[in-house]
Image (cartoon, rainbow, N blue to C red; front, side, top):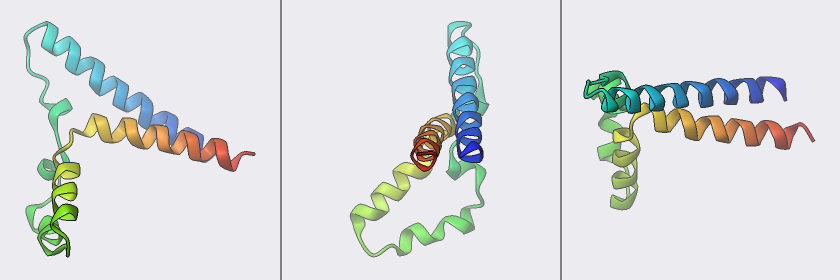
Length: 91
């Protein structure tokens, strides 16, 4: 239980950290490129060729949208997921 909630808490805190710094940077009219990173920008383009080979077009569109989502949203979603999973496993 502790490991799931710990990982979830770390993901949640890092997601909030990136989101808050993005907001502060926007308020100061500065650019904070780290908050706008997506998995498409981080991963090698050759490793993303599997998306084109997915059997359904709807699944390809969903995978493209997930890969284009900013990292702070991934952190927030995974943080909530792991916190809920840790709470369920702890009972």
